[in-house]
Image (cartoon, rainbow, N blue to C red; front, side):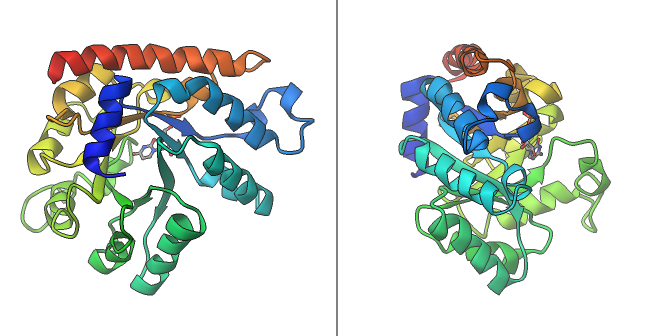
Length: 271
Ligand SMILES: O=c1ccn([C@@H]2O[C@H](COP(=O)(O)O)[C@@H](O)[C@H]2O)c(=O)[nH]1
């Protein structure tokens, strides 16, 4: 899916919602625990109830790999179940020396058919480029993350006097282009989102941190939206754990709808 297709989906659905599939077995409602694959059954019901409101799904890979081979199987089944027109993100935060990155890319883009993967920029150009060699696939590079610890490195001044996240954006935006690279920018970063937008006006941002982490959707749109929307805003726990009984998926659908309606208003306000 290219940037224009993604924008079209956003316009059609009046939504830039990404639903995070951070499926924790300890939070799965008890009636599903007797099925052969509770993680997949949970995801399936969540997808059924939220697909109408979402333009992307983001399974966080940690939740699946922690379960061993069975977890990878649940992940693959989940990926296969997501409707083909919805953008998929492997939130894996990979990146290593070139030949190893190449195999991470093969794992997520070929063995599994994700549209995109999150990548850490710390090891530099040769760790990121192998992911960019896959046609119609996207790298989503960590730029300014939503967690408190992001200040430890991302906000410190580099040799040039600029904060490190600015160096990451300026340098990495030359490795790819707005049609194969996005950036992770936390919803908790407020006005700093505008600083990121100034450096990379055309790129999409994947924005985690609304919902459970308390980031403001209004601020994200105000500081981050561009003429193609340029935003995929993720909520994981706030949606998928809206309920914990037999009606969990219905409640998740209602949460997704609530966010979609807010997004619809923001799209007509800023576009
Ligand atoms: O800066 C970042 C980068 C990634 N994440 C991930 O997004 C989701 C957020 O989950 P919520 O439950 O909506 O808080 C989760 O998978 C994180 O690992 C992030 O939060 N911040």
